Amino acid sequence: MADLIGDDRPPSRRVPVVAVVLVLLLGGYAVIRHLSAPEAAPADASSTATATPTPPATRHSAIPSPYSSAYPASAAPTPVPRPWAGLPVRVGRHVDFAAGDRVVAAGRNYRLDPGDLVLAMDRGAGGPVVLVQSRGSTVLEQLRPDGSRLVLEAFHDESRLPHGLAVDPTGRYAAYGTSSGTATGPSGLVVRDLRTGEVVVSRSTRLPYGVRDWVTSGVVLTVALDPGGPPYRWVPGPGRPVPVTSPDRAHGGPFLLAAAPYGSSWTVTGDGCTGLVDDLGAAPVRQFCRKQLGEPAAWSPDGDRIVARGARPVLEVLDLRTGRTTRLGTPGPVFVSQVVWGGPDRVLVAVRTLAGGLGRVLSCRVGTGSCVQVALGEGSRSPDLVLSR
Image 1 (cartoon, helix red, strand yellow):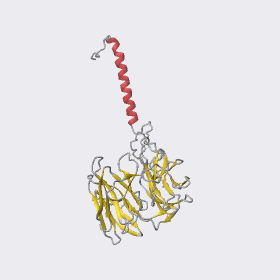
Image 2 (cartoon, helix red, strand yellow):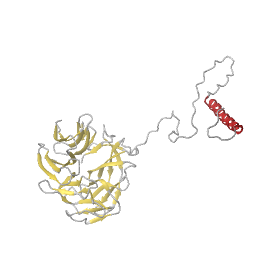
Image 3 (cartoon, rainbow, N blue to C red):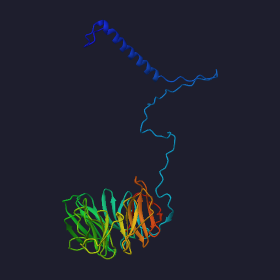
Image 4 (cartoon, rainbow, N blue to C red):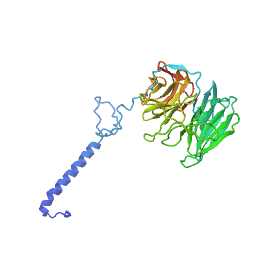
């Protein structure tokens, strides 16, 4: 046997070490052969029974895997219950909405091109105005009752992007913001006549603005940059947008919550409170700090209440006269994507599951806080539901 490299002991003392190593190797090999051998089939009690070949046994690790299921492989998957499953179902006959390429407005059904996706929707005098993602482009258009479609503008790449959409209270004009998709690129505001599609107002702006609403006092704007800032009011024309209130440089914001449909009032949020602004450019005249509110939000038609998302995924209705809040019975956990008033005491809520696979429209009574599911037919469970304002 060749000398072991680096071993300077006499040959008489090397042999026992080599023998021990060989015994360990041979013993390990025998154990491996034994473990990998198929298990013997049990002897059949009958002398005439035919021997059945035994398939090789599959060895499993004794170490539990965190990815192993606690249920047998043959068990059927348990469906995840929908958060709103316990709510009653009612037929929604007067709900304007869009789901994918289907649009329902004023009792009429419109069908867009297959694969289209409605991103925003507002009511117009001659039919709904929609912002649609279609074949790699974003298209702003009005759907006419006769089946025709008036294309207001198409955005084909990032050199010009739309920001928001709102139709004026008469239903005759549509406003939207534009930008190049960069902080330093050109930005602007556009107003188009819905009867002809022609541009009636167009002005460049220093900041990129998103159009949030169009109320009697003017177009409501937000800054389309992170982290945003105070909202603005713009009267379509050559004049500049005017800040609704002064910025809070210590805490950031305040940020827009909702604008009154009539008059010149706005609600803003900042530092955990909701502020009521009654004079353009002035500080809030009143603060509501009992409940922290945030988007989405909407101002009631009577001008006295705000519905908004609370600190948790619930909806709160704030009474601006008393400062009291009422919680609506929306199920949880869900993602609230949109709220609109469907009447003086009814709120429509678009929700979807947190995983994003299912959607639903709920109708909630403000007085009682109770909610029901709204059956809207085809597309009513789509996670892409959009309510018309």
